[in-house]
Length: 247
Image (tube, rainbow, N blue to C red):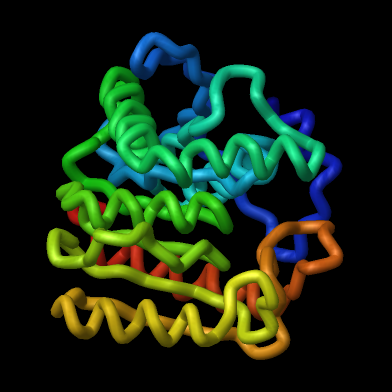
C-alpha cells in the first residue's frame, strides 16, 4: 500500500519509516470492514484515526505512517465498509448521511475498530481518537458517548450534534483545530461548540487558523494550506505527548 502514496505531494519534512503497516479485515455487526494498522512497537500508545467522507484512503494511511514514525501505533478505522470508498459527491453524502442518521451505528463502528486494533495487539487502554472532516464529527460523537479514551482531536471536523445529546459524559480533553475561512462549518458553529464544552465543564482547546478553508490539511487539494497544516500537526503532536502515557 505504501507504493500508492507516491502520488501525494508532501510539504512536511521527510520521516524515517520505522514500521510496515497492513490492511486489517474485521467484522462489526455482521458487516465486513477494512482498516489499516501500523505500529513501531508492541507497547506504543495508540491513535484511533477516523477518515473523512472519502472513506479510508491513501491520505489516512499516510497520516498513520507519519504518526507511527513518531512512535505511535495507529488504527485507521473504516466506517463505510470493505471496498466502499466513494468518489462521487452523492455517494459521499449517502454514506455519511446514513451514519449521521444512525448515531448508535456510528458509535458501534468506532468501538468495533478499537476491538479490531486490540486483536492486533494494540494498546487500546492508552488511546487518543482523531478525525478529519466527517471523521472529526465522528470523534466528537465518540467523546459524547463517554468512551474512556485519553483525548479527542478534530481537524476541520463537523461540530454540530444531534438534538438531545450533550457533552456531560466526556471523559478527557477535546482539541478542535478549525479553519477561519471554512464556509462549510462556520465560526458560529465553532463558538457554539466552545460554549457547550465550557458549560459542560469539559477540558478543551479550540484553535482557528487564519485563511484556512475546509479540508486545509489535505495534501494536493485546492483547499490545502501549508502553514495551517503544519501548525495544526505540531499542536496535535504536542497533544498526543500530553495526553498519552508510557511513551
